[in-house]
Length: 254
Ligand code: 6PG
Image (tube, rainbow, N blue to C red):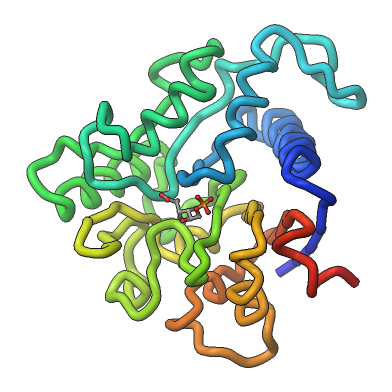
């Protein structure tokens, strides 16, 4: 695991850095494999990042990229979600709805490249199983236990949960599947499992706010319980990036 921790002065700088990092992963993925696959997180922190992505509709202003001042190859970008609330896609709590409104409705990613969690299935278990099947078919991953997305974007709660892997829940014990059912305060959620997250080429945490500091201290501690602080379970074979704003990362600044 190749771990990088960056503390940015504020949330706008955090978003700018995340955008830059994602664009660099996008460029490499398309150069090497002809497509870019990313799983998105929900919550409030990534929303300004998604809004920034929508501003790239016509051109990539960030110099130094193959696509600088050109339109991104939207048709080569595939969107997944690392977790989703078990609600219809038009529900105010839907991560898909938030992402479409902030980004996907404003750019030319083909509908076929957007792979939402099938939350209209009759129950969360069926939704998780169907999403897993869709992922396996997309990656044509016969024989490969955990296919690798290029990027999995994660947030972290102030209880150190990530995706919908909450402390001391059964979802943390699922190691033989890509997708499982999580639960927050009795509300079912669909979530990547931590082994599937760990198969990504790059995992990027976006964490902001002083309220995350205590959880970060435990996640970064040499010794602490993984089931109490689930973000500790995220130890990808590839790259692990922690992008923090100063409010969250105060104690971690070197
Ligand atoms: C979700 C997210 C969740 C989120 C954390 C942090 O569906 O809510 O995927 O894991 O990343 O709860 O949320 P904030 O960014 O709002 O603090």
